[in-house]
Image 1 (cartoon, rainbow, N blue to C red):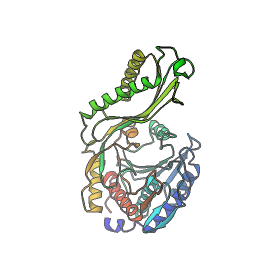
Image 2 (image 1 turned 180 degrees about the horizontal axis):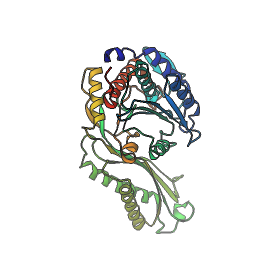
Image 3 (image 1 turned 45 degrees about the vertical axis):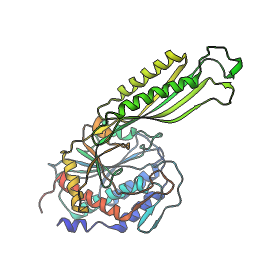
Image 4 (image 1 turned 90 degrees about the horizontal axis):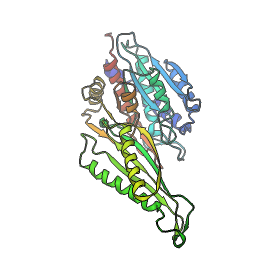
Length: 388
């Protein structure tokens, strides 16, 4: 009985595994220790485990629970790394696990391991495989998914993917992409006194303001055309810095911010748009502009009728007793890598924690249990199971 299987989800086991993972510091790009720990745990629960070291300081853990054949492979995917921000020592209180990475996203890693363990111990004969992948180059700016991009390029992927973070009580089917622009507006020569600077000298601050104004005009244009589920594409100005003294004519001014774009907008189009703005500023102000544009993730879209979407929503309904609404997401995650580069559908669903990237981060143990139950039911539905 499926209810008996869900009853095997162990809250204490989930609590301990999450706490053990959180206790291991794993800033982006330095996840060897936590990868080794997670790999050992997955081996102990009976999975076939391989540790891939294409990126030696951030190895990927790839584990498989094999089916008997004839069904698709479902991948449960999560990142081992956390933002490099100190946090109070991990602890458990009031039914929650506290610590850096508890919500983002070691709780998700624990829940997907628990689901695999329960299915393995049940003796169920799955038709397809369950693939668990954990990686350590997720959090920008130190990671951009280089490791899972390499796995996808080599064909290490499921036929569908659940990324075990970002959303717990909604299901994003559309997401915006993100690029970071970093533009430095310059003029020749050194900074100089305002009264000793020759007339007609280009002014980098005015050039930067011109660039910002062009971005604001484009932002307003984008706002008039919101996308279904996710809203409008956007420009955002994070920093503008130029000059070092009230009467010195600076020789540089820096503008940094974000450009978020929809699934039908290519990164090349975003870059061309910004290059056109830069060209106008250079022509109108006499300044030069050095533009660096970093592609963090592209946008994504997954069909509402995809089998993984249907299976996940049915599982959530069975566990939570309510519907899982379809929404859009402006948050950036790894789904676009699988969808755009791997050609397979990917969705986000994890335990609902709080405080990601904040001073205090935590995840409720009840949410770890709920997520693990959803993963069990989704797995059985998606990969198929021989009748007993």
